[in-house]
Length: 174
Length: 174
DNA sequence: GGTCTATCGTTTGTCGCACAACACTTCTGT
DNA sequence: ACAGAAGTGTTGTGCGACAAACGATAGACC
Figure 1 (cartoon, helix red, strand yellow):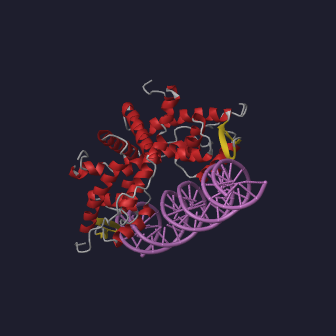
Figure 2 (figure 1 turned 90 degrees about the vertical axis):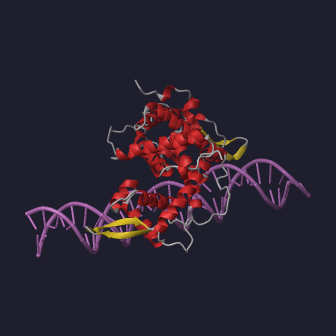
Figure 3 (figure 1 turned 120 degrees about the horizontal axis):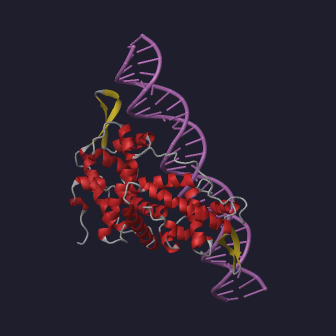
């Protein structure tokens, strides 16, 4: 098989590679920092992600926006409400389909995102301060590509196998 | 300056580097998989992290355990309850300080963790399937080191500067 | 044209989790 | 013995994610 079997690695190697924990740790800190820096942006990092997509990509509908960000439709409703109230984006009825709303950024929204991106970039460098410059970019890049791959292969639930218990069978000593 | 200014990168580059979103995406999928595979392990990935530390490191008290995992003490209480009920770990009063509980893994707990780690490693390769083998290891490694650095520099709240608004000042056109 | 179904957006309710606050036990120092 | 500190457990509260139901509109089919 092509894959290295992690079970053959020494325990130290495996213990250090608590990938889920590491991700959680970095993400939590990232969010802390970002929430702090973007205090005025409605819904913090959430609003930031949404605003970024709205500005950089012209996503036709809210549903498409939700799909793009892999978040629930119903979340978009209130976040967009607040971004709109802050004058950063506008809801426009799509002329060809009056059910759909086209979300467009205002000039103010674009300016805000620009400033926000500057700050977030700065915060990221801070969060990843434990890594040398070069490796930060590698990490960002790898994370982005992994995430992208996950996103396009979206089906999420791959019913690969019937799941057995992790626990050893009952006849084993406790 | 040593740091590359991300604002100078072309928009496409910056858009792709939505680091927080990427982390969230990968983490969410990782958790989905792990929860699925470790269905029988109390509290899924949470229980997994805790069990792993209990088995691999001999952490003296619950407080130390919480600090090691950077989670709240009060979470430990009920997760440990359930891990104990599942016969995977034991709470023992520390002989020299009867306030403290020493958490030790049972043989069954060790076996369970061993199997769980096998599965998690497999799931990780699946989650990171979008990356070639080699880069998966790089990502794991970088994430681990970034997380470790964050963890040791724990103070979390670094009141570096008074935070200004991200929003442009009021005289800007909307 | 009229009806029927699917889609878009919004609203509401439920669930789980993080965190704070309080209570209890035990240790330490005087 | 007493006061205060530290380890643990319990309870309550608030927030965010997600599912389900609802109204509005579009498109297909007769």
